[in-house]
Amino acid sequence: MEKEKTKRKFIHKLRSRYRLVILNEDTLEDVWYAVLSRMNMILWLGFISVILVAVGIILVSFTPLREYIPGYPNGDIKWLYMQNALKTDSLEQQIQVRDNYIENIRQILKGKDTNKHFDNIDTTEAVLNIVIEEHQFDPELQQQVDDAEKYDVQNYEFVQIEEKFDLNKLHFYCPLKGKVTNNFDTKTDHFAIDVVSNLNEPILSVLDGTVILTGWTLEAGYIILIQHRNELISVYKHNSQLLKQMGDRVLAGEAVAIVGNTGEYTTGSHLHFELWHKGKPLNPIDYIVF
Image (cartoon, rainbow, N blue to C red; front, side):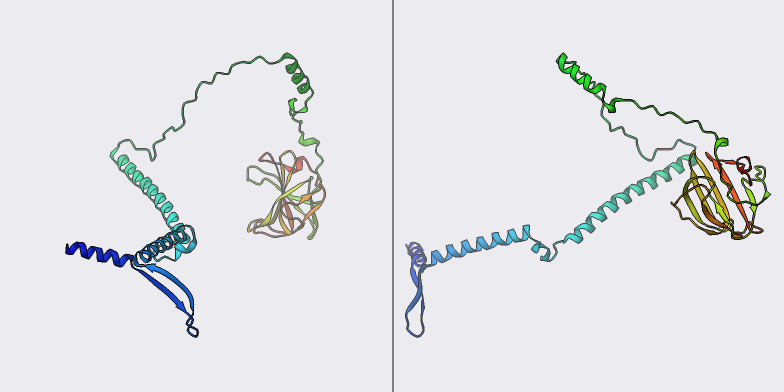
């Protein structure tokens, strides 16, 4: 009985209604009031707590506010995690290669066969035999398509005709007028001729072409290389000054450099001239009158 009375009192307290009133201090007039019970207060507080928890979870899950939570990784830390994972994977592969290499050395010292570093596994799938069935098309439509394609330029096969090339028929400009002091000699690996002339004389391009290299070397001084048609290359060394840059287009007979005495392999003002065709040296005297 006492337990039932206590339970009834507790339920009665929960259901007891109270008035919450806000009064005007000067006029003692009721500004706002609300009738509440302990049960209602508990329900409202529980509902508000659930709403606040839900809003907090949404903010943390879908907004950048989660990065302010202590211990939660931000974008930079995640990037570092990913980079470290990739480096770790690469390091494991390198360690495996090293271990296989050491094991192979041991096998070689023992006189046994070596193991491959990696097993070549064919991951390609077998090609299925595809059977293409022939379909009958409308003869008139087929005839129209054939007539339209008959005069289509894209359907013509262009056959490239190789031009016959004769070095002897080319007109080479003389790069520098002067006296030839050192001739072309394959026995001494002198794949050029040396032409002596006055200082500051211009050096001319032997053919139309494009400058593919300019620069300075310790042995040859200032050099310039010109690529011509038909896989011809002309080389000019020991210049005192270069008049063209790499990539410039030059015409036959156009000045490309000035005679000089630069580089260690020179004994005076002269031009070291080379002529190459398909990677093979040519004797310039056979094609040019100096």
